[in-house]
Image (cartoon, rainbow, N blue to C red; front, side, top):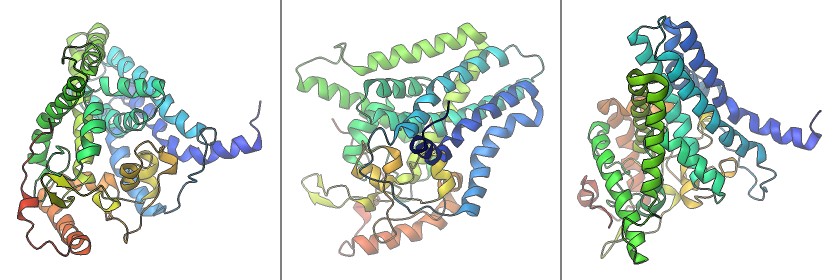
Length: 378
């Protein structure tokens, strides 16, 4: 049975974004053969896409804002298909690798480091796309992906805190000026959990409900995460649990590296009385690099995501350097640079200074904005 020409055209346009699915066989190759193949996942995810970005260049074309759900079916199918594929890969590999005698302990650790690279780079990114949709099934699948990396509270923090307070001191995820990733990371791990809890508790309080009400999503988060931990132990024993925790920690690290890059040093103007200006496109860093946007389903068109959070990834709009700040490279390169603070400052600080001069020439004292303080929203 062949697809009609119109449907085949839609599928063809969506196919580049399905490149992430090709990462899953690499995980199994490492599990089956061991040796140098256990490093395939980070090598391909980080370095191959960096080279592809350099070779292929930029994509500044915009999707059709009038596209219907039918027009976007194949794009949505990619994010939905990833969920069972990740589940089967993650837990199937725990079952296979934990007792595997042909793999050394080091090979198992490196292999699941790579699994964490894709459950973070792809899995959490896809959960981000799914959690923003109105469809209950898609939101549940987004929750499932987050449970597999023990970071379920990210949904509450992202939807209730980050989008509201981005580029202000009330947003834990906005990296401050001159804040290295090594200061940002422990801070955001602690503060994002607290801010997510406070946001959900505050919503319940406004309904005159206690935090212990069963509608608190944290109960679902804990149940799903507990189920994943239990399944890892059942399938692989204590070794399986250790491998599961390795991939989860790497996935969280990957997510927060991206979060660090997305808004580094950018701030909304303070209007007084604790109020800030509305979010504008220039409050997010953008990258139009074609290959990494295929891998990250246009996450690098971040300004438009904050403008229209429920807009599906194929129709996120590109912004020029006259409209929003641009990164010199895609996220694969920039997240590596973030791991080296002197290099990061050399690359980014001139760009932040230029951004300040371009959008806020009237602000001459940036000291209050530079402080890495973070009063958590209540």
